[in-house]
Image 1 (spheres, protein in one colour):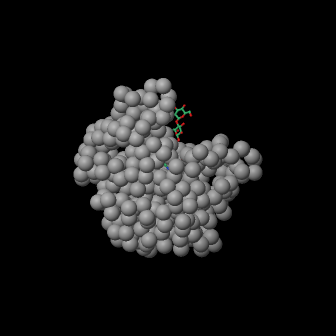
Image 2: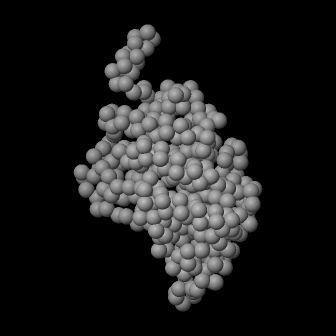
Image 3: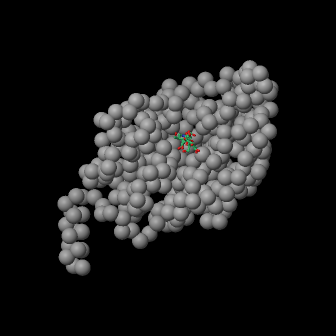
Length: 370
Ligand code: G3I
């Protein structure tokens, strides 16, 4: 026993980082009183088919986001067909565990079926018709979970990286005020729900400025934006902790809370940096998948340090941070295995493919004590 203890101490001193997970606490307990610790959950975790993942979710997190279950294509696949079979289970799961339940997402350029924007002949519909569809969708979905989903990502990724408005079908057909309508209707459908704006790469100064202007525009229209969601699809070296720090400050000055809504940190070679644009597809190449079997210790430690550094920044801003949500449970669950290059072996989360907590998990727990 003593020998093992001495060995562990020697390793800690030699590496200067944390040992594999021996923590007796949980993420949600470690950050209790600072902010919620959330996780995006997939269909198998919602239904319990992935029992190992579901157990981690229930034990470690006090907030959940549906990775896909509430997207338009899932809940409203056909004009008069809503399918709430999975999202009902999602909300029931959150209630069972007394979690802070997030809705993701109502207006997005992606994962919205073509029929939404077309008439029966496949021709683009006009502004009033699309507004009616958006109104019905929001009232049906938000209304169904009134008082049960506490926080809605009303609009997702409405901005380009240069801060201008994305030229989505929503914008093309309705005009810029589609966002104002979406927020107003969400609020009418559930006045108690938080209204969020969610986007990636908000650490890019131009995009951040675009988000500031967007929030101000919504506020000027009388909308109470509660939270700006900084997604946090990060790399080992981007964004810098300084720019994360500044980004949180900039949004907090608008009188909103900040949430990190989709945190994951890629250790693989960045092919296209500073984006989480899911339309990006890069051809596979062995050099882009350097760790197909396991992550070398040195990189594992880099990842742990990086998580600790970021959580240090989040804690510094605890007065304005509402939540930090990881975008997936284990590395096997992550979308980053298939984006932007299909079939890579990625290591962006806090649990490994065997469901064991990684060094990064301990680093996050340890960061909570500083
Ligand atoms: O479940 C089906 C399966 O039945 C089918 O056989 C298979 C064939 O393609 O697809 C499966 O669905 C995929 C789904 O992920 C579940 O794995 C979809 O094709 C795929 O498009 C979907 O990707 C999701 C992506 O958003 C698009 O909706 C990712 O899981 C999800 O992590 C990702 O999340 C987004 C956020 O919503 C917004 N911010 C960026 C973030 C990452 O792209």
